[in-house]
Length: 297
Image (cartoon, rainbow, N blue to C red):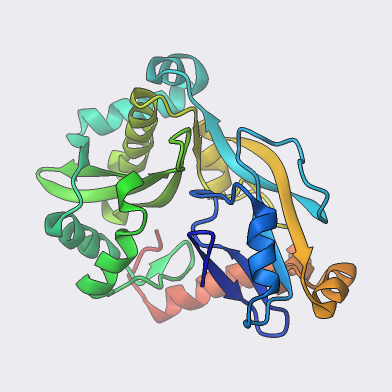
């Protein structure tokens, strides 16, 4: 549904929670105006949730609030990041990528890009120890997925011997002051050439060249989840944990009760990390057995 010119999505079955499509890439400048429309909506919405911008972490509204977090890299210049922020191990990987023949550059959104991404997505049915939901996606579905926020998107590709081995889709906010890594993927079989490090380096350069002050990469931490390889990767590239206000505005009696009981959080937040960690290991082993010879990215 459209609210104040922006798409609102509604998730959940028992508790219906509305949120801004592309949260983090766009924001409601006037949440109260959006709430007024949602309260009159014929769709059942129990809770409306929204966040503030990375550059503005001081709470400004009196709605029920919790602290959320993002992995954020403050950017001044590329040379500052390359020379002073990252350590020698990360610098060596970026140089290793170039030495091994990896070339990174911004590219246009066209059929050639989509075919290349399709090849990347078809490399392995398993990623990060679980089923990769985009494996085998058809070209038209891929086009629809990658064409969101196209006027504010920056596509960066990594090539080796002319073949695409990785890509990033960056999306800036409306003011072009912060950019988020909406998609990032590299081929597993070229992991030894450090294409992901080269892609991140070009993302920093692309942001610095445009005067974009913040690059964010999803959350820094997820609920009770302990450190993992992705969190370590963000940390090594000098992404920082930035806490920012997340508001939960109840619109129905069900919403108010859900907030009081903490039911607005996902089921995973209620599972102890020791059990969740054990489940992830079992899942990885099961997929390894089901897809022998397939390396999880």
